[in-house]
Image (cartoon, rainbow, N blue to C red; front, side):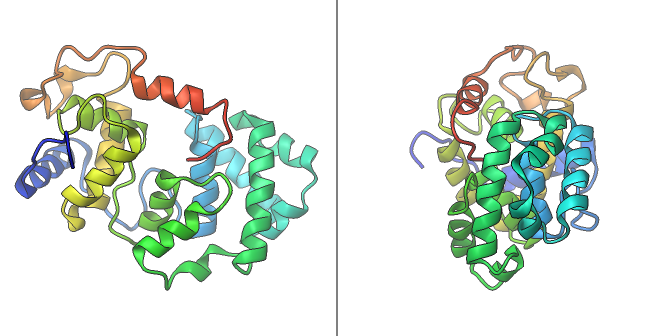
Length: 252
């Protein structure tokens, strides 16, 4: 893809191995980072993580909604009164936007997919992504997460942490748009490495290569990182873009 550096497959494997040295080996069972095996719960979980930093708040909200709505949750969510859903969403904030989105999403899944995303399992990768992205408020990142974690597909979802780390490492142009990075990585990174590399990049962005004051002295990648010791910005282009999107209908 134009503007992206040529990265041999061995470089991606080395990156995976170095990150695994720092964060541990990635397994599919149990799923990491709080993700769910059930695709209905996973999509709900992923949507609650959007613009939410507190894992505890996400888990508390998810548990409360599932307790009220049942599993799969969409029929129950569609029947919840709006004020009840707003109350359940209080721990994660953005309650009005989230309530409207979840009501629309629940009705769509119930009406078009027999009330559960498990019906999508037979679809090939691109068909699965397209179908998920047609759901209200669901963008490519959320679709890839559901596909990778719940359907076992070899995909690399690009969230804010992945984007930050690959840009700082020089594996993507700093000015590259989110969707372009997603498209590039899901072609350039060998298929068998995509899931594990996604998990490790997210962990690295959360724990080491943070937006503000990254811990470069503790980073296993610092020796070969062009941004080591210099990346201390408090607001990057992608963060500003994320804040702007928060004022628009949610698509993650």
